[in-house]
Image 1 (cartoon, rainbow, N blue to C red):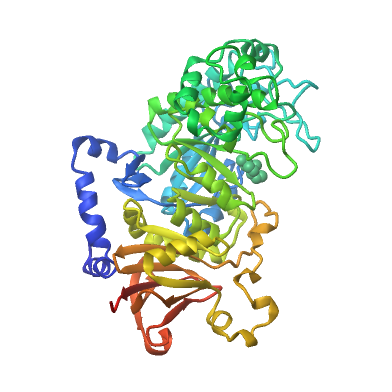
Image 2 (cartoon, rainbow, N blue to C red):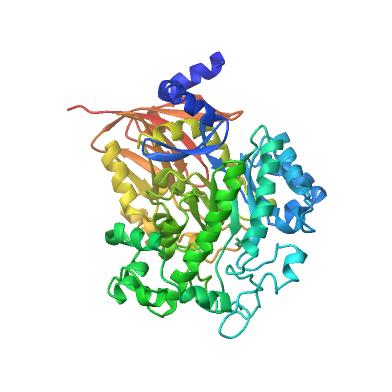
Length: 571
Ligand code: DGJ
């Protein structure tokens, strides 16, 4: 560590917090062997992605999925992503490009992404687009698509699967005899190739398939699917249900309860015959397929692997089949966990306005939160990382996004990441978000300081000076109440902050649109922290006018600022 960095570490408390922990964790032979391969590790209260022995926070973006099929198209984009301060990008490995003819492999699109990402200082997550892309077989090779006798299609009660707005999605049935083995062969070859060529571990994680499930019906009605439907429910699922009976997701508990919590029988005996029963049946079979692919891939290179879900029920997609039936939606997480224990994360594609609610459903002790697709909202980003210790956040269509707000947020979070990650494991990181009163209460309890959203003018003005619309913190309508559009940024001016407790009476606070006042505790010192060349460095000691003589300080609206605060008490 350079003197400069050492000094900085001491100023922020980084060295004292991270150093000994990292040394202790890398001491065993077993940990050293694992250290070179990116992996997930439970460190204290958080599950973290460990890269070269250290926790890594994925400040990411997902490319439009067809973008990485062409090196020329991608040429200007790599630098743009690095300039926006991403440290990770989600690219793609599609089956049709990798195995254009059966048994003939071409990894050039993957090699290009690894080389370019590495050259630009970025890490990569690769989506394995095999059998399923948003339920369809769109990225499967032509030799698969054109051979429905060998690779049967999904059948619904009215034919092929259709989306609610009428588009026909040609989905390949999970029950086909040859399909999984064929996909697994290609995925195995891909993982073997990455193991042999990506010796620097630019690739951190694999996404196994993309948005599984089926449209147009709650379950596949093809002959092989009907045969599976009449078989007994597997004993592994029944014993998972028995072991987790008290904590099952409500949808699952209702379905099982509707048949009197049977402990053996066919799918219909145990779950009934309605749409949820069909969804449970599909979820089990999709999850087993993803588990098989994950196991196969990991046997070549044991990178962390996750799969993502199209959410449901949402908006006008209420019934399974209107949203993808059998995908890892919140209500089916227990089925997925029972069927696919080797899959490290079941991750929400989070385009819903209810960002906080969905995060809460997916962040479970058995399922660390990672958001592979979402829209740009800096308050949501800080919430996911500060409140749920999310492993990463990743707006979709990042190649088309130019967002100063996201760039500045990633710059700040990138510099604070070592501090956030080391304190996360100690449970000393929290977030506040305008509109979430519980988070404010938590902040006030932890710091003894009071917090209001807004700027000095709006919060400190005497009541008579306030316009009616400014009377409360509710005046801002979060832009997230509007339907976000893929690849675009919604304006979101809610106040927010991430708070790191570095000592019992010392806090690093990074955020915007908040005003903090002395309350039970006094504000002793407020120091400005600046970010330069990716590092936090000390700025001004703020006092006098800047803190109303130790009474308050603000993180202004429309800009992201970092402060170190020390509090004291006179009692
Ligand atoms: C969700 C899918 O997972 C992505 O592949 C992409 O289609 C996006 N939606 C946006 O269109």
